Structure formats: C-alpha cells, structure tokens
Length: 353
Image (spheres, rainbow, N blue to C red):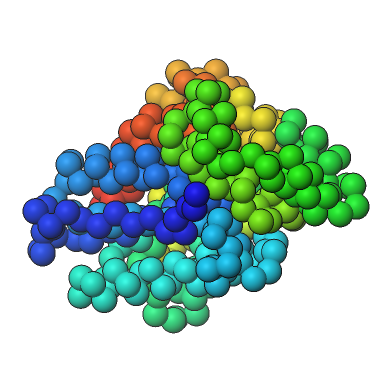
C-alpha cells in the first residue's frame, strides 16, 4: 500500500464561476505528516464551501518532507527532516501551489492557511516570513487568514503526552531503534493482514490504509520521532511578535495585510499534547474571545477576561464536544463543519476592510 503525497480539490466544472473570486486553502498536516489522514476532512470542507458560495474554492494539502510511504519515488525523502527543514519545505510548497492556481485560473487567489498540531506552528512561521516580505515592500500573494486546529505552538514538552515523549526521545538513537523494532515485528506480517487488524480497532478505511502504509514504509517511525524530538526542543516560549499576533492591524495602523485579525485558534478541551495552563495563559495574553463564547465555556470565562476588549486579536475557541487532538481519525466531518463557518467569517472580515 502507498499513500498520496498531495491532495487537491478544484472547483467543480459545473460550479466554476469565471467572475467569482478564487480562494486557495492550503492545509499543513501534523506529525506524522501524511496528508491522506486528512482526505475526508478536506473533501467535506470543499463540499460545504462549494455548496454555500458562488466563489471558487481550491483546497490542497501536502505531506511533510520525507513522509511519503513510497520513499524511493519521493524527492522529499532523501534525508530525515527536522522542524526547521519542514518549515522551509512547506513555505516553498505553498508558493509553488499558489503559482499553480494562478496559472490555471489567470487570477490571483486569496489564500487561507490551515494547520493541525505542529502544522499550526509551521503556519505561524510562514505568516512571520510573509509579513516580513510585505512590510519590506516585496510583492507577495494575498494571505487573508489562518485556521489553527489543536495547535501545539508553545511548551509542548510540558503537556501530558509531551512529558512522556520527551522521556522516550532522551534515549540515545531512539528514532532509529524504535523504527528497527517496528520493522522486526511487522516484517513477516502482510499488508492486508495488518490492514484488517487496524480495521478491527474500529478505525475508518482511510485511517487503516494510511497507517498500514506508514508502518510498512522503510523509515516512517524514525521520521516521526526525529521530528518529534525537534518539537520537544524547539516549541517552547511564545516567540512571535506583532507580525503574527495582530498589533500591526490595530485601529489606526498599517492594514495592507489583514492576516493578523483573521486568525482562528481551535483548542481541544482536554488535549494531551497541550498543557492546559500553557493554553489558558496564551488565550489570556494573545486572544480575542467573543462574549457568547465566554458565556458558554467556563474555561474561556475564567482565563480570558481581558481578551474581549481587543477584537483585532486572533479569535480563540475551545472545543466543547470532546473532539480528540487527532481529529482526522474519526471526527473529520464535525471539524469540517466548524472550519467551513470560520472560512466564511474570514472572507467576510476581509471584504469589510
């Protein structure tokens, strides 16, 4: 079994509006960086957006560098990639994909980024570099918003799962050793048998197929743990300034680029990859929470009293449906419905500026 490196959903031919605005939504996966885990999520999101608007929506996502299961055929798999290389890789991919949409349509698309888990960290780094280009006067694409799903953007090693992962990854050569052990125990297990075993655990077909390909790949687990080690070491304090958090779009300042005021953070209520104390402190310091959300969520009410007075800040939302961190396994449709509304809100805010 093999997985796809890229997913792309184009406007359907019967709905493509030549006079309508084109929007390009680019999704950055978490770790493990296999985009096939997100197929139902991206498919449902594209269906919802296309059925509710006259605009043209292009949605794409790409596996992280080195995570193709057919590694011998992947240009991105020649070396194990840490977090800095992943940021560089995704940034280059984004520009390539925007150019492809521009060439196919003859129009400049408005761009919205999405990121899950460590993909949200990569998203913020891309925003930082984008803002620097814009503020230096360089031509760049129009980035109008970002949606961060279960973001791991500060102090991941302090989370419950991060504490366990840090202990494991402190063992010398842990990625290579773990990969070898998995290879040993699955070498004689045919892919179709492994697939059926995963299905017996009540996982959907796309999860069983992708996980089987991942386990059977030559160095999949090694790549996951190598990237995870960088996450534990590098995702620490809040390292972003006004170029990300929104001070540059406060009333009366330069608003050439509206990305800052159009960020949505969707936090898990009990996310084992995010320490609740860290999450609550970030919401209080950096986020905007509307009055309705605060009245219906006790966590938001108790941690973000100062946020409601600054509507130009990123919108912070805490899940109230107990959706797990790895939402793409069994909760794709639910999260797609939420993201659909946030995308529409981002577009509305952009039109109002």
